[in-house]
Length: 132
Image 1 (cartoon, helix red, strand yellow):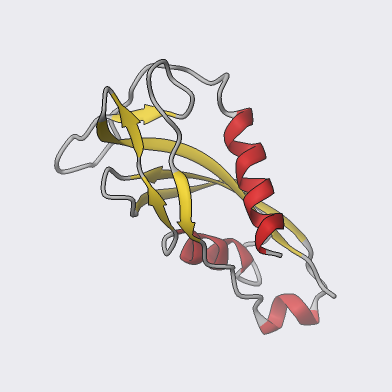
Image 2 (cartoon, one colour):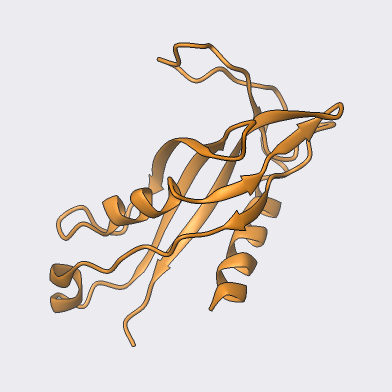
């Protein structure tokens, strides 16, 4: 299952390589750190060190909710996750979107690099919920 999540993460990261290459500044950030887009010129992608799987809520299981949540997250220069935003929702009524965000915030990365320096990089990940 770990390889499944890594494959999804890698595929989603690769699909963002064609995104805008200009750095952005997150709104409301007290430090006004520059956030680079994944795949920007000279910016290497962060790599996953530790991933945390989202928890299925009892209500979502009872209602047989399945599918995926698409998230945008900022991997900070220290490898932790900063801002996480839901790009494509699966479920707000039974808590799966919230569980995906909680799990994503616990991931750890080798940070992205630009000119040999660790930088904040915006990446997109997909978390899939499947009932067995």
